[in-house]
Image (tube, one colour):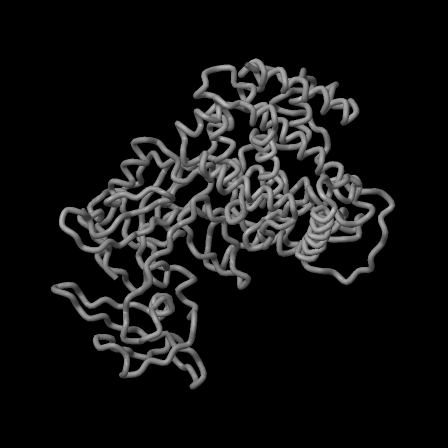
Length: 577
């Protein structure tokens, strides 16, 4: 397998190490910022950027997008996340000189290249291909005959020396030479990987084009068999709670709670015991690093810190932070064995529908209201220029797009952001919305044509709730209904909405395990920012809005007081004519 050459031979670059296993690459990365580029032996020679960041070795696959040959343009583009470059050196130079994160989810910055010490071999040797444990296991048993395409000579030769008729062998095949290139020897492992991607006809040796990467970081779970998961261009390779495959020498790190608790997800044979006390998933009131032990409502210094904190993070990263906080608040992730035994069910989505889930429903409703008010404050608190307020609106709309089904899939978070954008104090800002449509037309159109109809359907119980698209379902309508709130509108319409909401709650409880798997899949390998994670907890938002003393006031009084504050801010920004 030859090292790819597209217009510019990046094999001459000092940071390119050619075919190199992941373990050897990690051994060369000593300090944060060290990076190298290698050709992946397990993924068809695709270039992979290996970088050490915050003590962990991360690996990012660069997609090679083939183009139709045309004069004056390259034959392939190299893509990392949403950006494409005409050559690999151009991609590396852009990220290194600009000190930009390789992905928004990890924040990893490549700054110091690790130069190779030996010349690059122009082909993979058999030893190099076998360096990865994935290559030693056949993906599928295949029969090879002379009817295969010409140019492939198969020599069935067992590596064990004395294999029986039923034993699997690892044949070596010789690829036809091109020009003066030497004969290239490969093992069955990579060929099986390539053969699985070919079309049905054996005579068509055209592999499928690489799929377009998603707009937000894709986080994958390891295979159930224990093998290392497939590379993704935005998946950080960090040790996790599933263990390291045999042959990997990287040390195990302590897994975060939202990953470690997955070990206890096997269903146990137990009888339901009605709990004596209701369960809460809100973390205890610990001293806040951003607020301190005591704070006043809406402290300007804290608001400035939060504004800078949110500006530092891409909407996709903020969406994952919010998903993590919402999953903990809803009892979807991070549920201990003692909590499961106390509430009699395995998930907060099941507890939500039961009579003794009153405390959980109240906490979720209060969290929703607090996040809505905080989102509205992000816009109404902008006392600067009109463009600054329009930029705040744009940031909330982009966050809502990152939370929608098919992306982060956090529907309670989406409902909170949309609730802030649709509040009367925000929606009345005609000049600000006009500026948004003028300066950020695509974002404004997405809000009007996609997000608003989606939110209306979700509130009416008719929106998407497939665990494949959604990580955390829209629990607010069911919580309101079960807490006794009446539906407003015509009788026929409210009866249909009532039935849809109850049916959605039943399906939500039934598919609780699937939602938990979907959330864990999105958060696998996610490295949250400590301050941003704290800023999205219910306790922090309550203290930010009402202060350490005011948060103890009755809920209705707190909400009424803050509504008056938002009315005053909205009138000051755009007074009634």
